[in-house]
Length: 452
Image 1 (cartoon, one colour):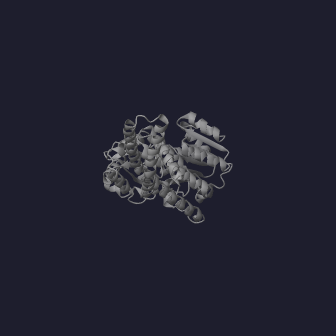
Image 2 (spheres, helix red, strand yellow):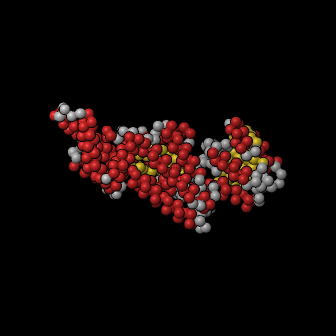
Image 3 (cartoon, one colour):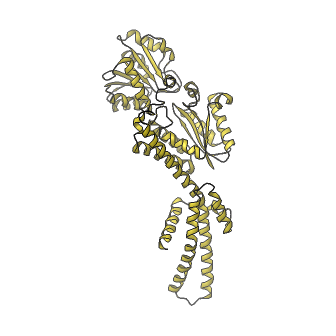
């Protein structure tokens, strides 16, 4: 099986197109199961954020996997394959692993170095686990990717290479309405992006924060974390009239903030501009508000067109980006080496199992010929024979694991099976053994090597 990535992001597609493809809730689960049930797919995980929709799959056929996933994305978005295909990218095997590590480290984000993608990827993994579409292969890869992302943020200054989308949006807000400290802010939604927005506002000195959400209890919980207050979505028209800054992060597919609401708010509010930041896909705020005097709307599409965030860290933080790229290169090599070594492990264990069977058979035959041997001598002879066989096998089995990490390393496992006449089905049967057992075998093997 091999890793395949099929997706599109802010780098390959306009925001308007991403808005049509982005998936959440029941639609996300439906897409996830659709991919996992495809003929050539064994495991699947879907990452869907405001900047990307990517399908990660463990496949046995490259072309079959690409076709199945592309067709599902086309069907979900209602876009013809010819139109969608121009914006899709495909990564396979080694390049797929490198792409994933780039994503979790924030190098592929609209704002270089942003850390929110780690939480989003973790949520995607959790969903795949809960839905039973992520097996051992994707679980292991995903956990490694999360560790790489955490290492990048811990060991380098990549966090400073670019602010979050919220931070970039607030910088734009201050250019329009002046300092936001002491202003009144309205956050529409109570999900993870809304929580990030509220926290960023609080750190920026905004002390009057209102959280409006369809589920009022969630709005109350989020408001309590920033010392703000909660409101119902039905209260939006009144809250808009009081706000200086609005951040909307619902993405439910309908307009949470309409032009009519904003128009009415501008007629009743005190003189001064209103800044609206739409961080949702699909968009929450009616783009028609741009025609209303005194209103400024910034959304993901306008940020993309202006190139905001794309190169935020490429200039002054080139060293951090270079350091992260170095980490990714190291981790890709380590992961691929581990994967190649793991593929030969069942063959090594099958060989040791066959050797153990031979030893037991020969010991049994010897003991039947020497019935007068006492228990102590029987044990000594048995242990001696076992040590001889183990020492003879130690070097070739350790060596084949090392060679397996090189390109074409799987041929060494085939050679081992041929040389020792192993049952072709034996490695497959062994692959079901618990990892703890295999690890114990490895430690035992290494210990014997130290004794020589």
